[in-house]
Length: 103
Ligand code: SF4
Image 1 (cartoon, rainbow, N blue to C red):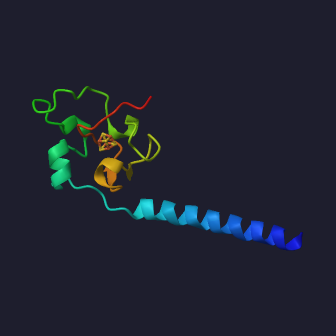
Image 2 (cartoon, rainbow, N blue to C red):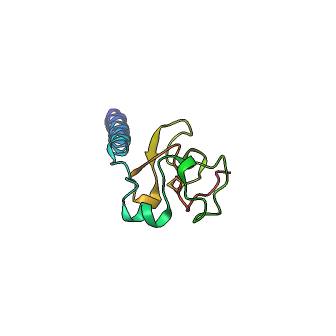
């Protein structure tokens, strides 16, 4: 009885520290530069207002990473990882042509 409780505790601690570590890894992920080849290809801008609207006609006012379904943070987070950029961080106020409105 005692040992199963102990192993439960040890497992819980393991899970919690793994979560803490992955959160930290996210927070430390590098930020995507607009000059990054993937960023250029997807038309990523740190500021959605600077999107090349002639090239990316699909852009609509009000769209930004913060309300995109791929954004891995809260809408209010200044930066959060995006799977389109291999988990690197993108700006909450940014935008790219892979934008997909969060449901
Ligand atoms: S996929 Fe969405 S969250 Fe990622 S950079 Fe493009 S607009 Fe931003």
